[in-house]
Image 1 (cartoon, rainbow, N blue to C red):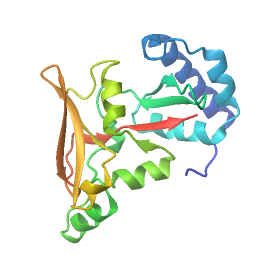
Image 2: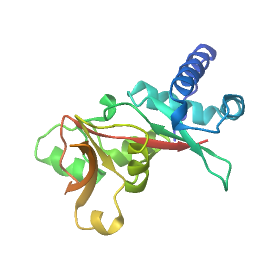
Image 3: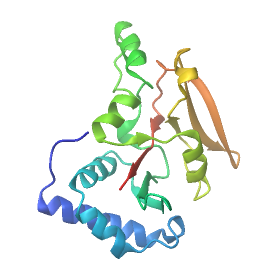
Amino acid sequence: MPTATLSKEEREALITTLKDRFEKNRHRHEGVEWTDLHARLARNSRALLSLSQMERTGGEPDVIGKDSVTGEYMFFDCSAESPEGRRSICYDPKGQEKREKEGVPVAGNVLGMAAAMGIEPLNEEQYRDLQKLGNFDTKSQSWLKTPAEITKLGGAIFGDRRFGRVFIYHNTAPCFYRARGFRGSLKV
């Protein structure tokens, strides 16, 4: 989890950015009121720090709904393409370690970066839900939280949108590509 803090100016700038995005993309969160969300954000400095890191790495986080059971708001990275500040990464630490032993520099790994930011990578279901809100990853790809039975075998999954459809693929965890990053989620 992130441990730094945001200055008052950084908090205000982030809140302004989130509010502007919220207003411009109301179709993503019908029935959600900004005043309720703002009050929740104002009380949660840890969430604001995570959202700041999502924003800083190009994720353009936005609310995509509210959990009817817990009352938590759900943020997803809603940038048109996989966040640029989280690309050229392997899926997990083992994959990164393997590449580095081969002398190939890697920018990091999905699981480590997500944990450091205090977010979760989108899973396959969440990714499909995101794609119902718009056309995402038409030129890029996003690693997805991979089920344990796949990672035990050294694999990982990722998705994109091509030809008007959402595709979910597989690769080995050490693979990394310039156009493949990951999208995160955060409950607030």
